[in-house]
Amino acid sequence: MGCAPFVAAQGDPAAGKLKSDTERCQECHGSDGNGDMGDGVGNLGKFPKLAGQKAEYLIKQLQDFRAGERKNDDQMPMMAKSISDADMADISAYFASLPVMRGEKSAADLEKGRKLYMKGDPERYILPCQSCHGEAGRGGADETIPSVGGQHRRYLVKQLSEFKKTVRQNSPDAMNQIAAALSDEEIEALADYLAAQE
Ligand code: HEC
Ligand code: HEC
Image (cartoon, rainbow, N blue to C red):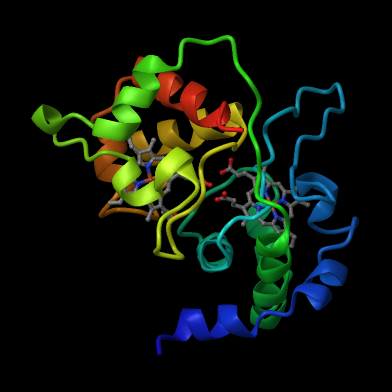
């Protein structure tokens, strides 16, 4: 058995709930893990939903923030440095145990994003997103592949753009290559489609 799965399996959601209390993670990511902070100061959709996210994926992101392999100008590097490995496992187990994130109905045209999500574009070597992220973006069998269906649109656009520009570099073999081939318009269309998965 590898190291990360072992840690994830050991995470205690009840302890994680306490450790991620309002002063720490829930302040931005929401007590229900849906991180919307409709606080009227422009933060809506900035804080990713963690509810029902894969525990191993969450642990990897926290380790990447801590090691500086995933950059963020806000508080995440500091937050990740403030917790131990055991805290990471417990807190990730807690958010993973919550009812999975849900999106909202959208008036946008979802067909373009849906098509690209389902089929990719072989001519440009864009793999179908579905082959890794699963149906409706609910995540595949691999615990390090995140749920992306129902995530906040604004957050999705930021991540895909940052993979494209290699501001986010912690997925060199998958997301950096795939996003490099996407136009800004396609990024918007994919985010529309994913954010609308209820
Ligand atoms: C001050 C607000 C704030 C606090 C407090 C905070 N976060 Fe975050 N977190 C963010 C923002 C903003 C992002 C998105 C970063 C980006 O755009 O790449 C983020 C991203 C993340 C991600 C990546 C999610 C993904 O889908 O890849 C994880 C995991 C995470 N936070 C966990 C935590 C944990 C655990 C704590 C508590 C120890 C915490 N956060 C505290 C603001 C916060
Ligand atoms: C070969 C498998 C694979 C394919 C195909 C793939 N992804 Fe990913 N994706 C990943 C992995 C693995 C990660 C996590 C990277 C990391 O560890 O930070 C990821 C991360 C993401 C994230 C960041 C999620 C978050 O919470 O921050 C988004 C958004 C995303 N992918 C969207 C897409 C879209 C849209 C497509 C199709 C254009 C796609 N992916 C195709 C494997 C894949």
